[in-house]
Amino acid sequence: MDVRVQLPLVGDVTVSTAVSAAGGNRIAFMDVRVTQGELIPPVKALLDRALEEPVPLRNIPEGLHLRSVTTTKSGISARFTGKAVTFQPSSSSA
Image 1 (spheres, rainbow, N blue to C red):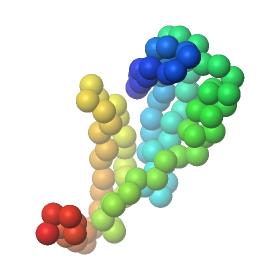
Image 2 (image 1 turned 90 degrees about the vertical axis):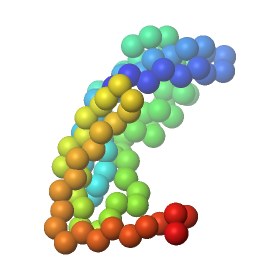
Image 3 (image 1 turned 90 degrees about the horizontal axis):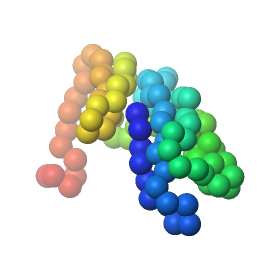
């Protein structure tokens, strides 16, 4: 997955990473590297720290388990499995 961002004082930077499903309904980012542009050391350290631990997904109904994660042109696609899962409308849509 490639992410391009505009950073103050640095300009355009493109970062590439692989994604995978991690236990506990989390997404892991691996092999993070800059493919275009350059990160100053403090920003690179901040990025490394932010992505060193898998990121937990929020608001996943109880009983669903993240099985796989893939990247698409529009973002990330996640596949789940589960048994006896109950879906309820959130308070904002009720």
